[in-house]
Structures are given as structure tokens and as C-alpha cells.
Length: 233
Image 1 (cartoon, rainbow, N blue to C red):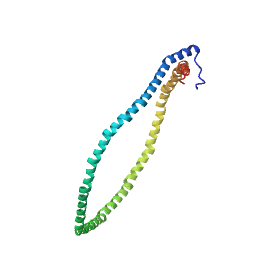
Image 2: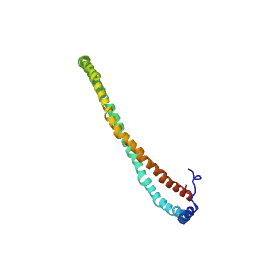
Image 3: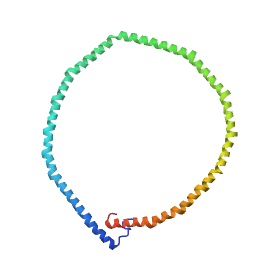
Image 4: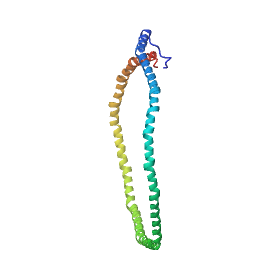
């Protein structure tokens, strides 16, 4: 229902509501508008000039400028001089010394490479022997054992389990399901579901409908009419 479709309040109730709205709402709104105008005037003609001509110059020239001068002239420039005249030559000398040392040990690195190559060849030869005479025979034996276990053990067990499932488990399960459906399910339906459904339709639904139509709906309608009279809806 829209605002135009809401039925207005009667005159004997609408006029007191309007009078109360004028008494309590209008003074508060006027006070709030006056407060907003005063705060805008204070911000424009007091706080803004104080910030522009007092606080900002004090903070900028009294705090920021000295801190920037101290940072640049006392901290940054000495650090740059130390980095250029001490740290850079020191690291350059260390790098050149390391390069000369590595180049001087060239024969040692070549000998170490040959030793590592021979060791890799020996390890590869040993791994080939292990695979050929140990891992491969073990793999073949494991394969034969797996096949034999499946053929002579797992497959007969599977046949036995299938026979038990078809001729024992399935009939027993069907019998249990039939007994359950004809005992527990019937008792639950006629002793719980049907009585509870009848009680719900007979004892709960009609009173709830009466409360909604006779109590809640009139209260909601009156509230909407009051709000429409006040212009809040």
C-alpha cells in the first residue's frame, strides 16, 4: 500500500497528532538548524583563519623546516659521504680480492670437478648393479606374488563374499526392511504424524489466523495511518 492509498486519520485524532508534532518536532528542528549555522560560521570565520594564519605557520616554520634541515645536513649528507668514500671502495676491494682468489684456485677447481665426475660415474655403476641384481628381481618376485595372491586367495574370497551377499545378506535385509515398514513406520504414522498434524490444523492454525486478522492487522494499519498523518511515510 502506497502513501496515497493509506486512509488518513480521523479529524479528532489527526489534529492532536499535528499539534504534538509542532510542539516537539519543530523546536528541535529549529534548534538543530541554528546549531548548524553557528558551527559553519565558527568553522569559516574562526577555525579556518586560526589554522591558516597561526597553526600552519607555527607548525611549518617552527617544526617542519628545522626537522628537514637537520635530516638533510646532519644525517643524510654524512651518510652519503661515508657510502661514497669508505663503503664503496671497501666493497670494491673485497670483490676484487675475491675474484683474484677464485681465479688463483683454478687448478684446484678443475681437479675437484674431475674427482666429482669420477665419483658420479662410480655411483651410477653401483646403482646399475643394485637395479640389475636386486631391485629388478625383487620387483619380479613381488609381481608374481601379487598375481598368485589374487588368483588363489583374493578371487575365491570374493566369490564367497558375493555368494553370502546375494543369498544371505540381501534376503535378511529385505526381511528387516519389511518388518520395519510394517511395524515402526506404521506406528510412527498413526501414533505421531497423524495426531500431530490434526492438532496443528485444529488447535494452532485457527487461533493464529484470528490473532493475525483481529489483532496484528488492525495495529499495523493504525500505525501506518499515524505515520502517514505525520508525513513520515
